[in-house]
Length: 93
Length: 138
Image (cartoon, rainbow over the protein chains, first blue to last red):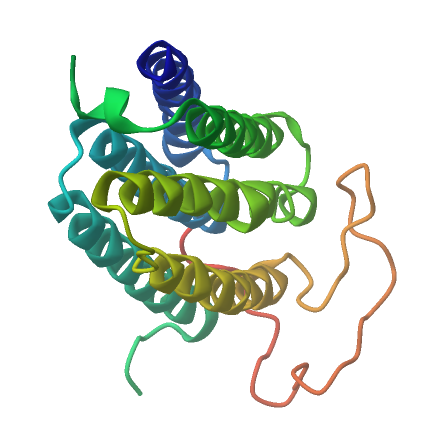
């Protein structure tokens, strides 16, 4: 019984997060200006991090947790570097 | 029969509720990212997914691995705390960049997308070293 409930919930979460990734990718491709694209990229990073956690729960392996930590750290670094570039024109002054 | 059937039924229901809440909030946040009109409105939408969307998914993952291993495992709290700290910082930087890059820098956009007369003179509006440059990359 618990396996059925968990499989349905995991399937729903994967479909919802996949749709969320598609929407964030649409904003990343179509964003009218550069900071819209950066916002879409940051949201895409956090969606993929959540999707990695959900896939890790389905497979039961703890390696996906480390992948999720790496994705979160890289997403923050990329977003802050791009925002700094848009703010000042260069990343390291 | 997979590893998921080792989880007791009340734990499975709790994990399922947290998963559904988290992924639905992330989906709503991304819908807002697509549907809202100005950048300053869009900046608020994804925080739905990064606050309770991340928290609920992280709680579900924590419960799953705690039930599978038979002891309390709180690794995933690291992701939750990291996301809670870094998302406001990144979005604050993005909002400042957007405000600097607006036509007529320092202008605050009205809800229908037209720049208003509000000069928004804060400490970061320095007209002497920013002589009304048009943004290079659009």
